[in-house]
Image 1 (cartoon, rainbow, N blue to C red):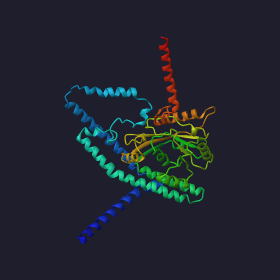
Image 2: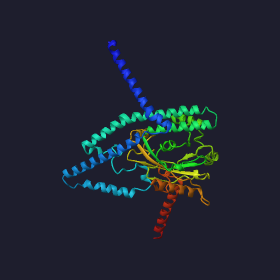
Image 3: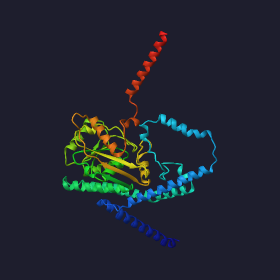
Length: 423
């Protein structure tokens, strides 16, 4: 029996070997090598145009199906018909300009993703078939490819930055560090099939300054770092993230804080000031909002990075939600679930604008400077400029605010009781 199975096993091993060789060759030729040299064959742009055509066809099919359904149905009134309008009316009353910044951005048309609408693909058989074909493409082909690229990019980042860290400090080490970071981030960008358009590159951040940008997603870092080198700022983590941080800091002077140091504003400001004072060091990348907003607005900037007194380089990032929702709702999705959504989307398409450098004007305090920079980013990215603090929505109400409301309520009670006694 074993003699009959042996040729079959050999055939399977040979086919697996050929498949792995072809797979690795395609990755090397069309993705990894172009990422090393910073070139593109235009495949992702062609893919994006094809998706736009596909969305147009699905929208046409959807419109035709809705018209046919309405034409074949007998018009009749049901009490449940008014529920939709009642719900929308209540939502309009309850809704506020802060709450809706922490939910996924609404789409004008369906992008064939179930997560953006759970009902559209039940309208017609053709539309369901088109949706099903998209599921096979996204999960059967794109997801395995993207996971492979992600592991490749992260693995190379850890290994190569550790090697570069062995070099003595100097121009050669800085040069190699820049090349390694750019190459690895560009591979990671391809793991998301990200199509990015950079505008006004003459305003790109320079050494000795701070780059500030609006914040929609954790991948904002990769989006910017694939076009330039930055010094990252963040808290020290454990696990895989800690391994990556320790490897990166060997090759480049990133700024990592211990958990106990994060709340020490003076220590944080001093380390940032010391970094920007050395013009040989890379610009610092900071997201002053402190939380992710859903790609529709820019919320209050924390003033810390604007108190240092150095040149600030504003950057506006705007995602196209038709191809995939980049917003990370951290209260709803964990990081692994979020990354799965990203890698199973059609693509990540965004535009990045580098704004002219800005400095603090005479007589202007840190808060005014932060608001001026925020307004410039909002205008350039076509985003709403809001004064609210994004952290308030996710944080607990401070005891001070509770006490103030309790005092007001007690005054009302005391006043009403006095009125009764007089009467």
